[in-house]
Image 1 (cartoon, rainbow, N blue to C red):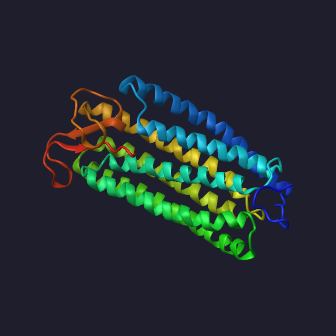
Image 2: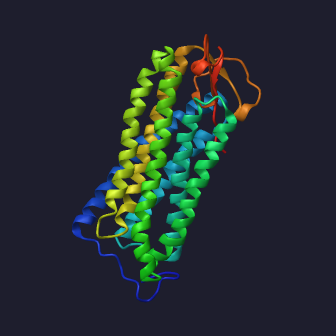
Image 3: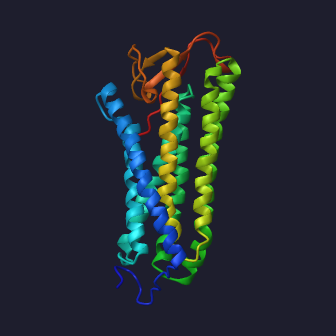
Length: 308
């Protein structure tokens, strides 16, 4: 049985016993990690709610990432089990959730990078550059992956076989670039200027960045299974691990900032600051006394970045 826009000659994906075992194991890990990640998200949500009396953009993105990753894993596994028939609607909504998944995780990373940038205009430009960069890839995938999954023609299938791998490599590059830039700024503007309390943040982020990039590599490797849909099942687990990394770094940055005792509260994108201590780095501005990094004067600030 097939659904909307599926041609009569559509060939069902053969799932080998080994592939079935692998996707089931991956789905099991995804379920377990969902519970772990949700626990962290709930804790951060309650802490932010208590401090800000509202749900911040960061928290909204965390929950969006959790939900779409779980949904992709849930429906992907049932599709692999043959319980969901192929249809335009199914493949379309998998793509929609995938777009949210990719865009949100990268915006969370940009949020973290922007914390160290004093120029808010540059942060906005970086945010929109990532949105456009990823958006162009997203559109291309809609134009190629969707008809390839519907098997509208052999040409689409062959092109998708190559382009799908290329897009994953492009995501790997932007992920690695953002993490490298964050490490570069921590070392140049903080550690090199005598703020050695950020050394732990540097090495923790370096380790997490390697794991994050490895998740992209794992997705690419999973594309070499005979069944062309197996890799979709790896996406939710990989991106939930990426999300957990970002939430862990958020906690670490909060601890470092809290230890400095030099925090002032600020509103989204440069509205007037309100004096008072805060332990929420996602809504904070860190002031460094004395000579500023990179030759900046004293009072150089870590500005909040809130993606909209």
